[in-house]
Every structure is written in C-alpha cells, then in structure tokens.
Length: 404
Ligand SMILES: *Cc1c(COP(=O)(O)O)cnc(C)c1O
Image 1: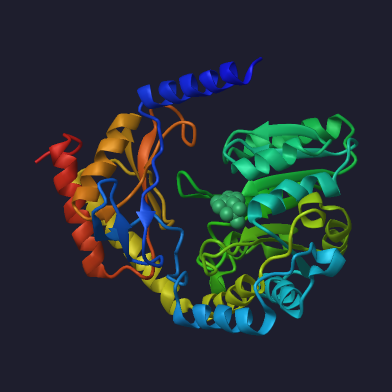
Image 2: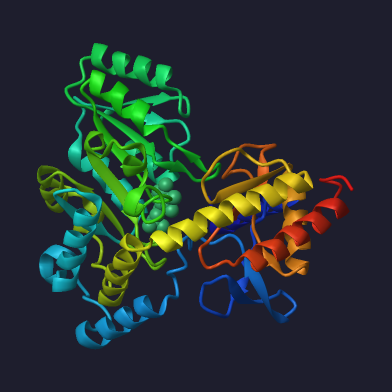
C-alpha cells in the first residue's frame, strides 16, 4: 500500500466518525483544574465555567498543600530521573510513596507505574502463565482488558456484576484444569458509577480458591472508611488480594499508578512487569504531590462527607427535573440521553450556560446509551450545584429531554 492510499484511508475513517456525530473535540483549559475553570472556545473567546466532569473527587488537583509538596520536590529532587527504576531511577521519594500507598491500603508493599493503565497492562502477564486462568467482568476498564489480552492465561468473562455467571465461569476455569485462577474487576464501573458487590464476589472467589484483583481507580480516596476504597466499603479487605489504582483521580489528579498487594506479588512485578522495567520513573514532583494527597485523603472525612452530600443533592435535583439517571450512590452521576447527537447537543447547550460537561457515546459506552457523565467533587459548593442543575433544566427543556 502506498503512503497516499494509507492517508486517504485514514481521512475516510475520519469523515465516517464525523458523519456519525462521534468526533471528540478537546476544549483547552487555561487554568488549574477545579470547580471553576477558564476555557478557550474554538472562536478564541475565553470564559470561566463550572466543571462537572473531572475525576477531582476530593478537590486535591490544585490543593495548596499538594502543589507546595510538588514544588519543594522539584527543587530538592529535580525534574526527572532520565532512567527506569532499576537502572538509576529510584529516589527515596519513590520508595516512600510505595510504602505510603501500601500502608494506606493495608497491603504489604506496592510498586509504582507511570499510570494505572500501565499497572493493569503489566500485572497479569508478569504473574500468570498459560497454565492459569483469568475471569473478568464484562464491563472492566479498557486497561484491564488489554492487560489480560497480553497474558497467556485462559480468559473467561462474566456478565457485569452477575455472581451466578462468575460462579459458573470459575467452575469452568477449574474444570479446565487451571493451576491458578484470578478474578479481575473494577471496584467502580466508571461509565455507570456502579459499585462492584465485593462482599459477594470475594465469597464466590474464595469458594473456588481464586485470587482477587480489584482496580479501584474511582474509589481510592473517596469510598469506604478512610477512603480506603471498595474493599473497605464492603468490609472485605482481606478477601481482595491485589489492588491497582491511580494518583490521577482523587489522590491529587496528577499521574501515576500502582499495584499494591502481598510482598511476593510486588517482588515479582518489580522483576518482570514490562511497563515497569521498560518505562521511565515517575517525576519526583509527581511522587511528592501524591504523598501529600494521600495524607489529605486519609484524613479527609470532611471532604468525603461533602462529596457524598453533593452527590445526593445533585442527583435529587436532576431527578426532580425529570432527567433519566442511572441509579446509584457514587459521585459519578450519568444523565442518560440515548443518541450521541443528543449528548453532543446537551453538552453544547450546557457549555453556553457556563457548565462544562462532556458527552459520552460509542465506543466508550454502547450505541444508544449515550450520556452526559457528571461527576461530583468536594470542591463544588451547594450554590455551584444549584446553578448547574438550573442550567441542566433549561437545556433539557430546550432539547425536549424533560417536560415543563
Ligand atoms: C482511570 C482509570 C484507569 C487508568 O488510570 P490512569 O492512571 O489514568 O492510567 C484504569 N482503570 C480504571 C478503572 C480507571 O478508571
């Protein structure tokens, strides 16, 4: 194929995506992340809008204590390591962060990755072989799906949250002669805000002698006692053997992922996980910011209480207006609209109203299940939420999504 034909092919793909109303556009933000952000519109206009779509659950992304810790580390430890961890890229800050996140989550140890995408990308291949099996939830995050694809273990999939199906798949894996079996699930399914039923899941897994891995990206810092996540929320911390997570959401919002678990697991990952062995160490400022964010999250009962109250309030306001929401208790509150074009139109109308939200549609959610995924933050005030709910009501009426 000539280069010309290749580029023509990509241009045709682009036109098809645009014709389907599925082209994603990025708006530029000129301010730090927060409840209010300054954005630049395509016409060059800048304005300040309310932000309802960040993973900034505790409002730590621009917290003065986190920023100060990052700045101090930039001064004391420099910009970066120019090395992977095992060659000459491990600073005291990296080990401090690994020890801190492990202690926070009640695990033996932890290992850092450039992102949770990489943690999930490396964990399965390093721990499991062709004699083993992985059983995974059908709604798992793309990074778990890709990580599982990269390992040689037999793969089984159960319907989202269906514990009978999980039980059957585990039995199938055992009947197939698997040496070790691992169950992998999101703690919170991020498109829907569904919290996994880990009490049931760990019981089923235990019956089959399976190891349990939970990706708790949308829970660590914000759910459960001390913000220790979905295992703590369900009271089954002992039954969840391996946790993966991110510093890019509630824990400061910068970057970085980790695997926390038994010492033997972390030790082998340090020797074998490819995204760890072949990718650069986290910048020291990022590690120091994450350390400060964990302290704030652990002590952040007030932040979690405000976050939960915000979620209850906003959910109630949207329901009263007549919007169709997915039920739940997580600060992810999806407003279901159906078609991608409607999601785009609602997001555009809200932007005009000064409310920043993003439409979600295929491929990130199923066709016909397009939505505006709103996310609550402790940084949002009650007044902010009322402003946003009023804007939703006006935009929803204008588009015929709600009555009145
Ligand atoms: C955000 C997210 C990730 C990716 O985390 P990064 O650190 O941004 O790579 C992985 N898994 C789940 C469930 C997530 O929500």
